[in-house]
Image (cartoon, rainbow, N blue to C red; front, side, top):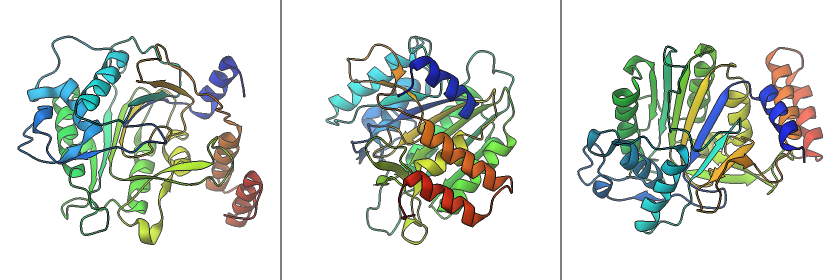
Length: 323
């Protein structure tokens, strides 16, 4: 495992952007879908369902359509989320991950100082899996509440917010459409810009394919067409969204789904368990397999290798013949 200094140098090379992620739970945990969010004081909850993570965060940041009277730090925000979830009977522990060591005592923000003049863009994905096994009830409401928050408080223009939702009125959140939205976000974002992504839906775990996971499993997002098209692995998210994002962009991601603790494969973390006082490098995090995977995909995207060569490279990273 590299030292913290070496890990930071590697992170600055293979993750050019500043990326922060709030996860609803640890990798080994599930995240709750609650039937009534009225007690969270959200915008127009009216007895509607919602995700516990999104609901707790918005109760802190946007209760009754208002910002908190006192600015909260990242640490205070995550710990308050944990308090709210615990009080409502949920065991999940929120987690903050980052591409750089983050001072968790600084004020929580989506638009950090120095980026106020940058363009603000967002991609919001909400999947209730309407008519499918495992149907959820609160993900659409999560999206609508979060969109209202980022527009009202942080000035994200409506025309710069891409919404994927299985409600018949928005782009369907299929695997291809989600990844296409992330690619478009990367193409359009420039140094100084501010990016926000929100995912509310099912999360999963699949056997790791390339040896970059200490626990042997990739964390996943579950698109609406997962039966036909498969899940979106953390490796897919890294090679599509995290790694290619331009240097100088600040991207904040909220992942309200099960098993989401390391779904973006970021090297530094703060776990709101009441024990950790600073952000630190993740234990057993070795980025080399992830770097190799990203370089292989970059070579393929640049036309420097064929699909067959890319498959051979991935197999070599796996150390096996299963793809």
